[in-house]
Length: 267
Image 1 (cartoon, rainbow, N blue to C red):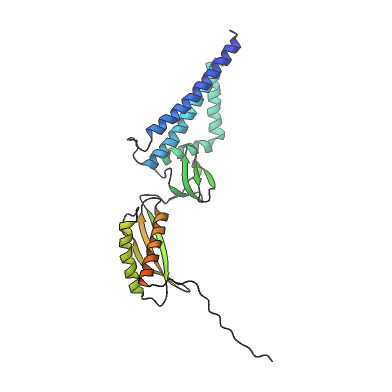
Image 2: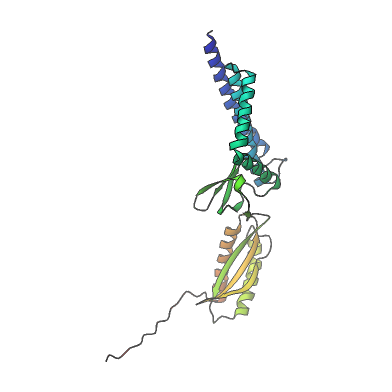
C-alpha cells in the first residue's frame, strides 16, 4: 500500500476516533453529573461542573489527536517539543488574558460564585447563566439577548439565586379605606397564600405602607420563596389579593385626574 495512502487512512481513523471520543466523553459527563448523580447533589452545581468538564475533555482529546496525526506525518518529537515551547512562549507573551480567564474560571467553579441556572449581574450584564467554561461565561437575558463574558473580566458578581429569592408585590388601596383593616385582611390572606401556593419558604410578610401616591395608598408584601419561583409566586399573590379585596369590598383605585374649567369673561 502506498505510504501516503496509509498515512491518509491513519489520519482519517484518528479523526473518527477523536469524534467518537468527544461524543462518549459528553455522554459520560451527562451521566456523571445528571440530576440523579451522587457526586454533585445540587442540580445547578452539577450543570456547572458538566459544562466545564465537558469542555476540558474536548480540548484534551483534540490536543492528543493533533499530536498523534503530526507524529504519523513524520514530525519528530524534537519538533513537537519546539512547537509546544513556541506555544508556551506565545501564551506567556500574547495570551495573558486567556490565562487570566482560565484561572478565573477555576475559581468560579471551586468557590461556587455562581452556577448554571443562576440569575446574575456580571460586568453590567444581567441574565441567566447558560454555561460556564474555563474561558468565559454565557448569559441570556429576559428578551433573549446573549452575553459572552470573559471570566478574567469578572470582578463583581450580583447573584440573585443564593439560597432563596424574594417575591415583591405592591398593591394600592383607596384613600377612603381603613388602612388598619386592609393590613389585617392582607395578613390573613397571606396565611392562605402560604398554605395554597407552592414555592414559598415562609408566610409572606406585609411590610405596610410604602407610598402615598396620587390616587392610592401603596402597601407592599414580600415573600421569601424558592429560587426562580418569585414570578409565579407574585402572580398568585396578586390573584389572592384581588379575590379577597372583592370579597371584603376593598377598593383598588385607578388613576384619576380632576379638571377644573374656568370660564373667563372676554374683554
